[in-house]
Amino acid sequence: SQESLSKEECLQLRRKHFCPAQSVSYANTNPLMIMSGRGSRLFDESGASYLDTRNNVCHVGHAHPKVAAAVARQAAELNTNTRYLHPKLCLLAKRLTETFPKGSGLEVCFFVNSGSEANDLAVRLAFARTKSRKIVVVDHGYHGHTQQTIEISPYKFDHKGGEGPKPNIHKVPCPCTFRGPFRGPDASEKYAATVAQACQESAEGVAAFFVESGMSVGGVILPPKGYLSACYAAVRNAGGVCVADEVQVGFGRFGEFFWAFEQQEVVPDIVTMGKPFGNGMPLAAVVTTREVSEAFHNGLEYFNTFGGNPVSCAAGLAVLEILQEEDLQRNALEVGQYIREELQKLSRQHQLIGDVRGQGFFIGVEFVKDRSTLEPATLETSQICSRMKDEHQVLMSIDGPNDNVLVMKPPMCFSKGDAEYMLSDDYRRDGRREEDRYEDDRRGQGRDDGRRKEEYRREERQEDRYEDERRRGGAGRRREERPRSRSREAA
Ligand code: PMP
Image (cartoon, rainbow, N blue to C red; front, side, top):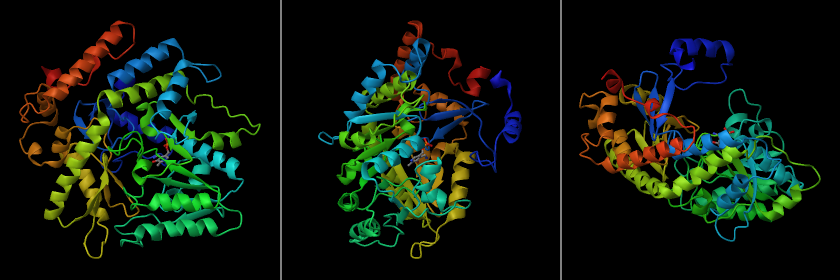
């Protein structure tokens, strides 16, 4: 069976059947083989548990019972392409568009399977709407892995092995006020002026401005206030459309806002989304206005075999419900704020911490060797990330053009207890094994004096609901198959 393959056998098969360009995390030290997950925890083949601060796909938590049950139920009923009417597809469009600001006009949905597909389609929509081919993109941005989306991703075309920008692509600086070219109080205007200038550079006008409302691979950058509204005005003035790539930052991650663009008080013409939408099921979307979609309705049919299939839609509907039921946006706001405050305190003790920034559960710590020169502490960042995994079983990631920004984009259920565990050294000095501590915590008897009791009660209630669903016919994972600690298995 699949479980009977050892880690070494997996590595060998991986070497034989895959291309090295398909990278594995921690490949140089000790890659992980993850077999199961629960909430903010991941478990390897030996049952050892890791705290996941980096997975922005399993948005409402790993293996969420409600998502699993919804997917299983729908898969047992029907999964096919979107040539037929299906209630889940229509309901998802209704529920999704209700999340946008009232009066935004963002009401037409295209369901696709990945963020790349969504951005690829957004390029086509922009071309159809404007007849221009010029696209303005922000430096270090990433929008996808298809040919078209690589062409709008400086992170790829400027990188080793990339082919540089095509003539129709105009790159503007990333609006980073920590180490970018403009840092003072007028940074917003100056960065926006680079967009206005790019729009005016040629007579053909502009098709689109592609921008994330918080730059992810760019190193967790929040544009200065007023940046997007000035950029959007310039782009529209030149006849272009504004595309908000919310693949990483959408669905409540910013805490205060469901969509990250709302923080900048703008309304895009096209919004693209993916990753968190299906909690791991392939589900992504483009949402736009009637006006833009009408231009696309030019005789060329749009058909996408898997886009919006009923099983993915079932996952999407469950995710939207869980976000509300479990008040996860508020959790992102409160726990995110707590994490940043604690990191600020750490920065007073550690000169290496150059900057702590972010919003909600979109958090970055930039490490520098020298706070005045801002020389990036790239090696140290990589060592910190590896040690967090090897010594503390905490999974984190690194982004930014200098690979010196430690990134936290945890699942939205990441609790205050998880945050304390991540931030505090004490938790790892008590000599207990990770999985024992987790089990104690689960029972509410851990060293946190029951702080997590309510969480576990909530989880138990979910498990009970899940069990009920299963009995009613939903094919779910059996209770016995849930992650266990080694200690419990031995008992
Ligand atoms: N846009 C952004 C901002 C992303 O971060 C990513 C993926 N990291 C994509 C688009 C592409 O999404 P996918 O990998 O689902 O194709």
